[in-house]
Image 1 (spheres, each protein chain N blue to C red):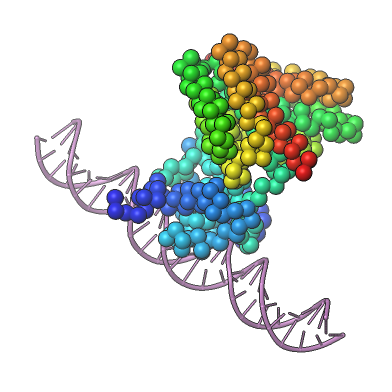
Image 2: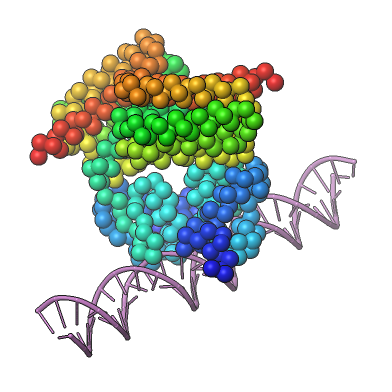
Length: 224
Length: 224
DNA sequence: AAGTACAAAATCGTATACGAAAAACTATCG
DNA sequence: CGATAGTTTTTCGTATACGATTTTGTACTT
């Protein structure tokens, strides 16, 4: 327990540690977009050799969090507005599908949990904290997805979320007005599920819930 | 020619070579599902060290072509029927979306090219060759997707295809009856696009096109 | 004979080391 | 003063080496 390594977070493998460490630093903004990730530097920093760091970087590349160029190096992937658009659009599709697939399996207890989280969100609107709000938002959807029968689709949702995480703060920071609508749409979604609505209807609602956020962002971006 | 590794395909980096080589052997069946991928063996075989091979294997793991277990090793991922179901279901969703997004951008020349491929497929029905048929099928859809504005979604489609590629031959081998319907559905899809049908309608048609294949497979699998 | 403990082999994980490619810098020339 | 060629520096890519872990085989006990 005196082992510092354990404190950092020990999954056993150093690759894993390196992966978690670098990812955390990207997400929390220590490494901001464009930051150059030098293998040797990171390795020394983490007290491991370059090999596991290299593997970690390649994993992050596969997830789209870093951009990698042969014989040149890796940099933290920027949040190109275009990239944001693509990611959000893709998310709207896979989240919609995930929600529709999960809906028939959601029991009333789960609904109640999701509703409780949504109420937290509503309360959060008062003293608005974009980061906390975004976190709750993910919790809400995670509850709906937790019994999703298709793990691949669930994986795609998580990948999308990871990509967005490189935006240090949230979409809601840019489009605060959207937060309020979002909470209402969550409630509407819960009612649809409770009512046993058809898969198509639920999918459409869930998809529009996400793409409305995208549209709000685009409208705001254009107006600058 | 003394170097077999070079002949296989040289993109410069040895990781890349190893990746391509191992992937090719999985797809062509040299390494069949369950086959144990021993790093040192493959490395010696390709004339490189274990490091790039390791990286290649991890990439293949990320794509779902191999299963990797820490301190144990990698094996070629089996085509678990369940896994097949998940992959096809996911594909139906992302292909549907990709088709709908591409549709407005498809011009008459592209339509003509797609139709020509589909006619090849129709002709292929006579002296039926499942592998060739599957290949043409991918060509057909690739033509429809080639102007897809969202590269992420396109990437997801390709990932799905890769997964399915580990089934050495095609779905159509198991469900030959489906091939005929498939050609007809392709034509129907082309007509929808030509007619400038709405995104929803096109998405629905494209999705059902894929899931009908899945259903046919399931029905056949159950009847055994 | 079956089961357990121990030893040996196979294989992976990571560190270190060196060669190769790219980028940055500098000095020389037009 | 600007541009270009050559040199230096940085950083990556891969080979080799060794320690760690799991698996397999074997002998011993019950």
